[in-house]
Length: 161
Image 1: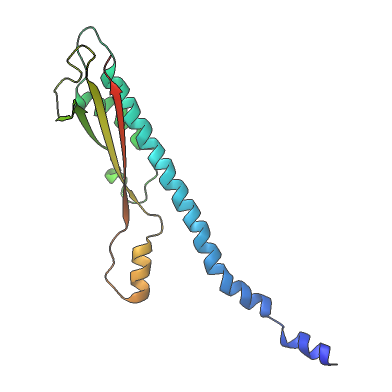
Image 2: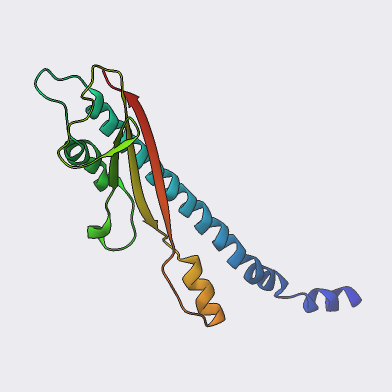
């Protein structure tokens, strides 16, 4: 009879163990999803910058593209591909063009010399987390909550044709 009592005493132990392990398992799964989304968005802004740099370095018989044209036609097309949790209007890619180390803005043509300079296109996107770890921690500790974000950047350098 001692074995029967032991079995009856352990009744529900699996449910308790599952309740202890479930939050950890849930946190790991959320972390995997979050890292995957960050890597996807990083790939998108890298591709957007690469397309912008390629457009800026292409030879045209009439005129060279400006930084505004690079931003409008090449980079902002990738904005719809980004995964962003929050206000869709805030889903923007910031583009900065540099030619021979100097920032180029607005309607200034890029690559004005005969292929001896390089164009650098820097893209930046602020990722907002799906599950905000800072807000969750502040709720548990009673602190002030702020939104957790991560700034993703990419730089592409191409030589002018």
